[in-house]
Length: 88
Image (cartoon, rainbow, N blue to C red; front, side, top):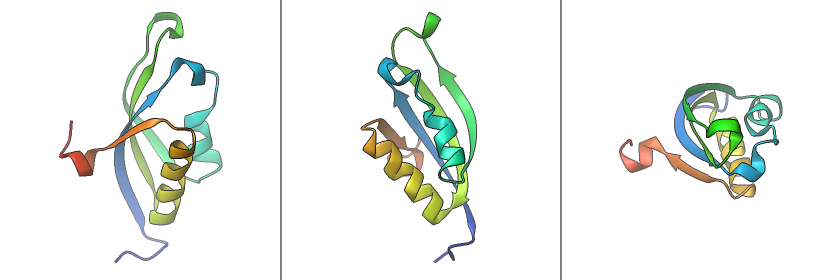
């Protein structure tokens, strides 16, 4: 089992509904949860119409990553964990 200070990586896909386009969702993962976030891929509609999809590589301690995932769940965003679904 990794210690609380060991850095881990997790790749997720998250859907950001158009109602959240003005919310700093990814910025909060960095500023409030201390995660390093790399946007590996993204799909956004023209003029921010419709939902956005982001493939994110998260890096942080297991506690930071879990806290960030809990935040996304609290927002009721759809999140797919690449490790649990065998990739996409």
